[in-house]
Length: 605
Ligand SMILES: Cc1cc2nc3c(=O)[nH]c(=O)nc-3n(C[C@H](O)[C@H](O)[C@H](O)COP(=O)(O)OP(=O)(O)OC[C@H]3O[C@@H](n4cnc5c(N)ncnc54)[C@H](O)[C@@H]3O)c2cc1C
Image (cartoon, rainbow, N blue to C red; front, side, top):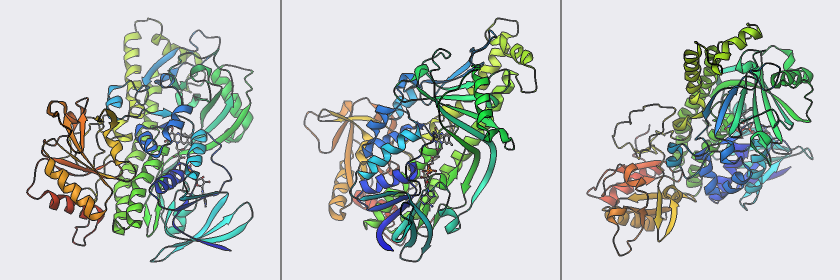
């Protein structure tokens, strides 16, 4: 029996746990990560890494490796629906519709203006080893795969966990101040009594990962997801989704692929490898298709949310706290965002800068965002059926009837204009999944670690698709490229390494002085920036000055030239003053007191 003591024990070595370890190590917090399998995931699951996640990975120094191995932007611009792939009928392979995906390979103006990073596509089985290598590179991290948590108990001072080394069957106890349950919902939630509620067993999915040269059969190099609707079967979910996996060639020339098929929950065929392969052959229309198969995963689509994300000193994150259909690519991304929200707070508490109460805001801030993700992913999954209805095809119709229903899409008939409109409308509606920019990127927080400035919430034109940048407290800091002494950087990157960021306008010197005094007096990690519009730049250099080189900040800042914004280390706006105040140091000090819960007379939420 070996006993260990560590500030934070992380249970689970998937996207959530590995991200948490990197964040904590990056902020100099020693952590132990245990994960029960000997290696990272071998099955293809998540593959879309959002702009927000790439911003976070940029800060951690791991984004370049992910970009290098990921899909080139030109091969991930769209998703498309096809009438099968290959076969005798002249309609096979016809494209029924297409949509831009997650910024259309960084060509959508909102995505370009929104973030310095583009969405990246790389399968989870390739991402996790990159994250693991990076997590292991920090001296503050102890990463142990093949080690499993079997029990835990907590008291007022900490958590005592029992761990088994599955390689040697040696058992040992770990004493930690806090425990992060990033175990996909397998152990920790039950041990601390945090249940999950929602809808489960919605659909059974079978995902097959294989190597094959499909380039002779496929077209459209810019498509990343192909919905193959074979009129023989008659419905998109009943047919299949084909996803390229690279690893060195992309587009139609990808060497590896994943084929997702849906089966009714009670269909034993889902567990019969030969039947699964028959469905793939029939959907592709390649009768002798017999590729080398690397693995087959069976999983159910569900929409589940933990009743709470915190029990004492134990926190749930990632799939342990919420599970939803992959529509919208919100799973792995929200796991990373959970960890990002929690870890700067843990570092602030363990480092003595914040009262432990700050940790209570993790659940208050993240649970509503994750609940919205669950709801949106379920809606996107259900919306897919509207496409089948618009196409007018069904498994209950004959293949002749199904072909006749979709032929007007590519052959001019009197029905074509109406048919094309109806199908286009249904496919455009699926942008709820592929262009959920506000859901995936523009989500906001409300808690007492965000200081309400009394301004009304902006009117949402489309709460899922449209991200409207704002500096209203609780919003993510809007993106702007700025320059300092000839060096260009993203304004948001100034929060790197756990820093608060005070941004003042060109007449906000009193805010800059106040921030400088607070940083010196309190030892707070605080960066200071005066962002000056181009028409106000002086000939002589000004302290803390960054030039608003593309006028982006001027357009998005909302504050007056004498106002200021305080940004948290996770890049969310915590406090805003639209203009000058009587006592700048007092106002800023009070803001820090509230955010970090440093005084006791702060109102609870
Ligand atoms: C087919 C499919 C496609 C998807 N596509 C996307 C996508 O495009 N984008 C996206 O964002 N999401 C997607 N997702 C969802 C995404 O894969 C998950 O949300 C993500 O893997 C969650 O990460 P996690 O770290 O929370 O959990 P997991 O990846 O499940 O990791 C949990 C870890 O905990 C370990 N563990 C469990 N119990 C213990 C224990 N007792 N002791 C120690 N370790 C333990 C496990 O071994 C595992 O390593 C998809 C999912 C599927 C199934």
